[in-house]
Amino acid sequence: MEASGKSKRKEGEEAEELENELNPARNYPRKRVAVACEVCRLRKTKCDAKRPCSFCTEAGIECVYRGQNSPQTQSAASDILARIEDRLARLEDFLNPSKADTVSTPGSIGRQQSIENHSLPSRARNPLVDERRNYHQQSVATTYNFSFRQTAGEAVTPRPSLTSFQSPFYLQFESWDDTERFYDDELTAEEHMYETIEAYHSQPLNLTPRDAWKLQQTFVTTFLQWMPLLDLEHFVEHVRIAAARDFSENNRSNCLTMFAFAIAMVSQDQETKFHDPIQMEFLPGLDYFSRGCQILQRLTPRSRRDIDILQCRLLQGCYFQFAIRPLLGWDTITELARDLMHKAILKTQPTGLRQFHEVVPLPLTDNEEEGFYYFFAQASLRRLLTETLDVVGYRVGQVIYAPVVTAELRKQASEWYDHLPPAIKFPINSSPLFDFRKAFLRIQYVALHTVILWPSLLKFLENLAPRNSDHAPMSESQLRSAEKEARDCLDYVVLVCDQAEEVLMRRHLGLQMCLYVIYANLCMLLVTYKVHGLGFIPHTRSDTHIRKVFNVMRGWEHLSIVRRALERTRAQMQRAQIPTDDYIAQSPSDIMIFDSHRGMT
Image (cartoon, rainbow, N blue to C red; front, side, top):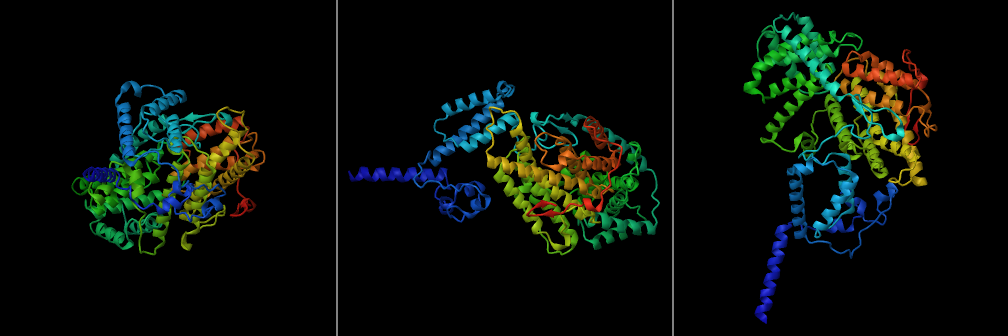
């Protein structure tokens, strides 16, 4: 009996050891998880364990705690086996061509999930996970299985953009998709641009010391104060070395100097200088840019990852941004970012740039120059915007209405603004700032709120549409909350339109992004213009801001992507009986002031 008891204990110890090996986190302390409420557990944040906790009290939501005697639905080992089985099933689906060609419908998805439930009885079903999986399957094609996160774009009902928009049925607005034309235009423009660059190869540069001094000063003002790529002393030293050889040597200093001078020239270009699309190929600074590309092509094969060459390649991509050549800029910067990843970690990451940015913290510096503050503010705001696009559903091409998420995102945006250093802080209104860096930050910050609040406006309009059996009507409190957020959304949209003129006056590093943002907000006003159910919002009954932004963007109509978008918008305005040939100037009384407690005043 004693021997059999020892053998049973030994078998139990071996089973326990096997369980620990299969799940090393099994014995991890669970004190924080045990006392945290369900909301804080899902958010993975610290919970003060009060009933209700402080976060749920502040957000106005129900605070729910997990029961202490809740049964364990599965062991850790079975959980691992279930995950392995799930991955094998997904691989089988991916390798099976007959399943890949099958069109997914909500009904077929439901039948497939039913089969999975019967075939995997050991797997515990999480309702939240199943709901997200079902939503994802309905919104994107099931055949895509990349190792990095994607942004599907304008697939279902996100905001309008320069290239595409699919309007939901309750908006009763037209949809469009100019993506193919956009790529055709960009590829044609690239060919013409490179033909011009090659033509400049044989032409000498006429660069006087006075011209070099002016271009240095312009580059520092229009670029280095936006993006502190190198110290001022190092830049001056590069120019000195290049000037000592009359800017004729094929060395790194001359390459960097040529790209810097090209950016300085193009940054002084006004939006009204070129109206002929053919003339756009003769951009200011293209002669310097051609010379820089010629030198870089000779230096890159043997030293592509040296710091000086990496800086030259980044300047090359930034010139494409100034020239509003998004594909060329994307190709250059993506290739550069890949080489920087290799240089930083000495191996290729299969997760892609998007996920790589998540694991790499934001950069830090002890330098107190304003340029670094602006650079870090732009990086952190862009990161916040990217995460917001994923959270509210743009990653899968369909916006998600979640009031708690909306409140949390608005809180994060407000915290970002509250922690801005005084040197770069801006007022949240439409008054002129006379500083393109501050103006760019401000319009991006305001546009972030329109992205966050747009799902609430769509949900409010959807609730007013004829009842659909798939969607339950909103409660009175939910309706009031959505109504307030819809009003706030259009208030921010109008504020973006009021700020548009300052950031579209000339070329700068953020011009390309501003064009996309401003046109999206222009279309949001058009989509909601005189819509039934939005009469309580005065902006939906006025065409002033629509006409104003339309005329401001006409200054960039020589760009093919803007020209096609404005042609479409002109037709939409004519159908809505909105004038298109007048100009609306902003008077001092039109300046909107933001009050964090009362909204726009």
